[in-house]
Structures are given as structure tokens and as C-alpha cells.
Length: 214
Image (cartoon, rainbow, N blue to C red; front, side, top):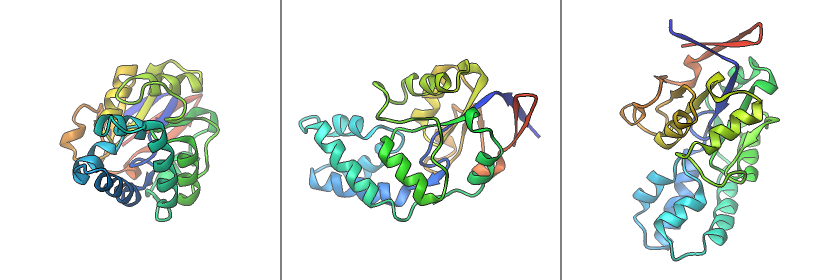
């Protein structure tokens, strides 16, 4: 069984710890159709990217800040069917709170709401799209996450479901696990390791070191 030893873990949220795909798809399809944009294309690129950056990319003529506020409101309203992935609660409970953080492209209110709906604890440490200047695939989100844990990036592992997140973690200098919940395994080929599902990953803590087995 392969294993990896690290001192901290950085989790993406949507597509890793929680399944919010249905609500995300509803919101972005409706938004795209209102603005004459291909809804399939909009939904595809919205995953793993900050909403404000998606708006700027697809509809540069719109007021991105205003659209972000409305999209956040709609995504919170459409989070009623968010669920935690199998193994999420068990994996988090195996880790000391100071040794893990969430690094998500969503805003802080949205991330906190979705975690609560899914029945997971809102962590002490979280980097959200509200906290950064440059989103994934830029390394800033994961560099900020490692800093939040007080660890060098190379002593952290990231867990991701999107190519942009994998590139972000790699650029930050940390190993990254890819899970094919949102994208295909082929799309995640840049990951250090690919997991079939989150519950395949197991964590044990000994002498301050987290051992990950899969």
C-alpha cells in the first residue's frame, strides 16, 4: 500500500469533502442562460475557480463584484442538497484541528454554509476566495494555506478534484492527491497520486507526523 508522510493537510472543499455539484450546476446554468453564454461551458469552467474570475472570463462587460454578490446569494440558497462525501468526517476526525485547513475558491460565507449543511465542522483554519488576490491555478491559495498551518509547503499535502487546484498545489511545492468526482481521471494526470474516492485515503498520526495510506 502506498504511503506518504506529511505534517499538514490542505483540503479543497467542493468535490473533495462535500458534493455540491447539483447546486453549483443549477446556479451557473441559470446565470449563463440569462447572459447568453453557453451553460455547459460556464458550468465546466466554474468548478475549481473563483466565481469572480469566472465572471471576468466569460462576461468581462459585467460588474464582476456585483455579480459575485448575487452568485454567492444564489449558491447559498441552492446548497440545500449538499452532502459530505463518504469518509470525509472520519478523515477529518483523525487529524488534530491545527494540522488541517480548507483551501477553497468559494467565498467564506458560502463555504461555511455548505459545511454546516453537510454536517461537517467549520474548521479553525480556512483560506477562501474572499482571502486571496489570485485564485487557483496560481500558487497563492495553497501557499496561504501552508502558512496558516505554520508549515513549509513541502510538509503539506493537498487534496483536489480540479486541474486548476492540482496546478496550484504543485506550483506551491506540495504533493497533491486527485479525486475524480468532478473531472475524469485523465484530467487529473498531473496529481502526485490519484484516488478512486476520498474514503480510500487513511490518516494516522504518530510523533507529530501524519501518515497517509491509500
